Length: 234
Ligand SMILES: NC(=O)c1ccc[n+]([C@@H]2O[C@H](COP(=O)([O-])OP(=O)(O)OC[C@H]3O[C@@H](n4cnc5c(N)ncnc54)[C@H](OP(=O)(O)O)[C@@H]3O)[C@@H](O)[C@H]2O)c1
Image 1 (tube, rainbow, N blue to C red):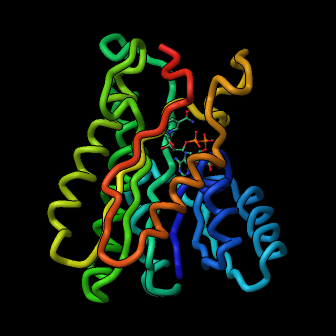
Image 2: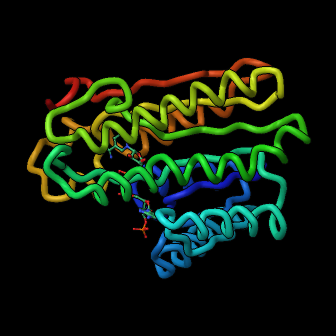
């Protein structure tokens, strides 16, 4: 099986890449930092020599780079069985008092990149009558939190897109899943002083993603909502 993961060098993306590499998936990864990508590739291939890992340095906030990434996948790599639109970023914001560019930038990475990449890769899946698109949304796709308006808006958009995609692809044999994690220990939470158990581990989200992929036959897990045992922080 061949899987594309965006934002694969840290957090949830990295945990998922590790888990899928162990299962023997071939991976095509992207992020902005080349050193991290090369280091991860070597590590994953060492752990499972049967896994082939390719990568491209991509800034997903740049539309041209997203389409060029898609073009490399389609023309130079393998047919894609699974696309995981994982890359995204969060920064606290006062939505109504920030520059327009803040919303435009976050929308670019959190919403437009998955939209462009999916549009470019899905025709191949439709033609092969197989494929699975997994979009990493957030609990902020369903509920707005204080000082997270910009992020929440982008994640509502991604969630809406995922639902629309599911409806459009129902009769095309392409599965679509929205994963909505709550607070998960990653770089986004660097420096936050909370007990380890208060947030989920990235490995738990990766495990859920793997479960989504192991469902047999025509069954689709349409969405997964995950939270730490003690619930939301806000
Ligand atoms: N952590 C949470 O609490 C939480 C909760 C709910 C949902 N989520 C969602 O889960 C997903 C993963 O989050 P995470 O916390 O695991 O993130 P993370 O640890 O901050 O890692 C983000 C990954 O994306 C890459 N990336 C960031 N900006 C990029 C860009 N412009 N172009 C290409 N790659 C980029 C990063 O690598 P480079 O820096 O090298 O580019 C890194 O590999 C996101 O969509 C996030 O919104 C996270």
